[in-house]
Length: 262
Image (cartoon, rainbow, N blue to C red; front, side, top):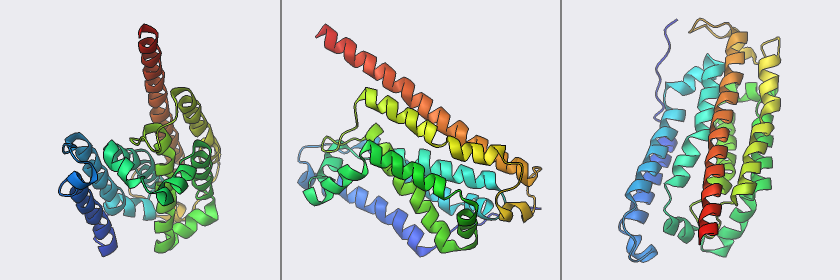
């Protein structure tokens, strides 16, 4: 069966992507002198931010969305991995420090954000919601009802932003946690996905009827597709987490060396 190539052009999605890009352009351009006088245009960060917006659209607006919704569990898992491990860090790294600090300056915004991105809160929220959405009845509901599917994606994307903030925050008002706690946090994030990984890869039956009865667009049976999806999840999770652990260890060592030589 030919793979369908449907692109989403819903007004809300396009307005969200274009609106975010427009507001960022205003904040880093015409409004910059009022927000942070003397700051230069953040070229490097703007590249990250717009790459994040582009990746966000490709993740939920490209044919990948239809493949994952109607045909392949593994394609849906790729979509979720992009929503969690690619788009959020690009957007966060796209915020220059002065802009992040300006956004977090009002206490009415900063105080709840501090609670939400507290490592324990972020870990618990992300792990709980990610696990919850893989319960077969809830997962199937998301595949059958568009509004629930959109909610599912928001329930992965927003906790992913919370999860990433303690690791790569650009802000001095709500900064990243120390290297030691960061390494423990990353380890716990790896452990948190193990139940879902085991649930998907060790099951001897297809867990989600939509994929069991979907037309086969590639040479994988539904159970193989499900196992592949679980492997994609764990390989991405482990690859990102171990890379960040190595970076944290190196940065921590450099910091200690610099302090010892000072």
